[in-house]
Amino acid sequence: MNLPPSSTLARAFTLLELMVAVAIGVLMLMIAVPSIAGLYADQQLRAKLEEFDAMVQGARQLSMDRQAPVAIHWSRTEARVQTPQVADESKTPGLPPGWVDPRAPVDAPSEPDPDTRPAPTSFPIPEDGILALALDKSLASQPPASWTFWPSGVLEPATITYRGPDGTWTVQYHPLSGDYQILHFSLDPHAKTKL
Image 1 (spheres, helix red, strand yellow):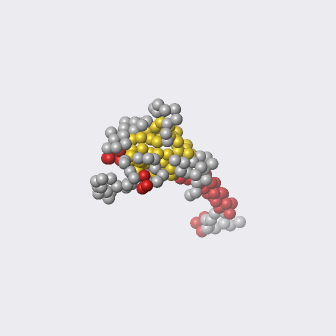
Image 2: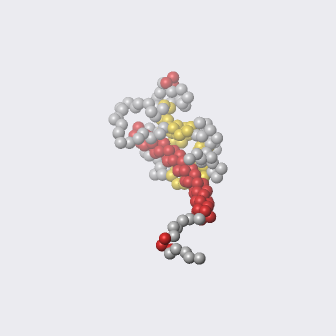
Image 3: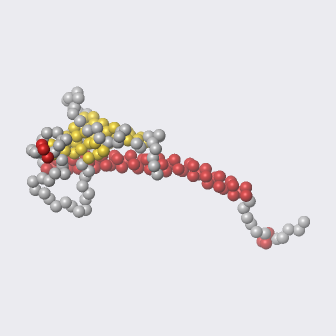
């Protein structure tokens, strides 16, 4: 049998080679998709931590700016920044007596800086989630669901635990610097993260 020289033969993939290549590609994709979903869930959980910290830092700054104590009050559905002032109770329904919404104008309004975003004044708690406050140095056995920030910039040392659809985190806030330390951060392996 005479075969033509190799330079004249057309090179092509066999059906078997193509099927192996497709199978390897599908296998790699099956391995990569859970990793991408995990990265997305991690990003969502870290965003919740950063959102909560922005509210904390905003409350701390507000207490220093107004030279008055500011507190974050917990309810079943949210944690909200509130400032004590002499207030008309009819204008502030749902807030504890003597506390007003921090978005209310102060005596001397200042021009907002167009380059900065205002700090959030509330943090929603997911329907089946938890946002728990533990006041580490509280003298009361059952302290109120309120966290105080003083005009000097000092805040009560507190441990905050969050559980949401993507996982849980626990952070501890330093009373002098206002910085947090992550004590626990974990993704929920059963989270149904939408990509």
